[in-house]
Length: 167
Image (tube, rainbow, N blue to C red; front, top):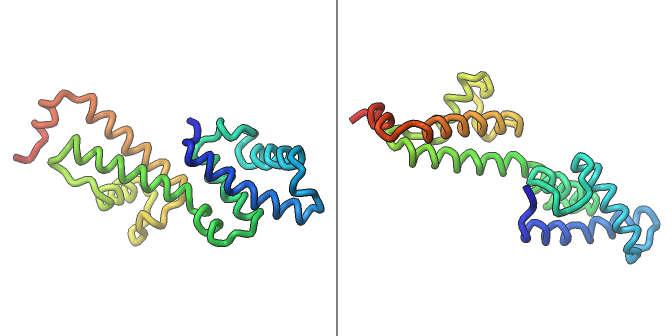
């Protein structure tokens, strides 16, 4: 998966202040393009499992590098935004999967309570916790649960869905 043009623009907008801050701390010339490129490749490889090209980054890599740039630049609002980015992205994907379930199986409600019930049965969510309390790993597992359920429903013939309907 590659980044969108908007994400690539954000990458470059975050890179410049991070590089300037790093160069200032390291007594490097901020206008030295070769040093900037070398540092960018090193930091990207560090944060993104060896990937150095912006065009080859995925969404999780993008979140990680944006957080690193925010930390390097000392940009506290950006740090606060990017630190929970993976969880925010996964929650968005979960909402989309729940909406898809509602469209395919309108006889049941597939909201946050439905997902919380599945996660409690799987011992991934304690009785008094909410979905907002879940770490990214648990959210990824929940996404896999919903994706599997969606694929099962999509593979069933339409008549099979009507047989399960409560009307």
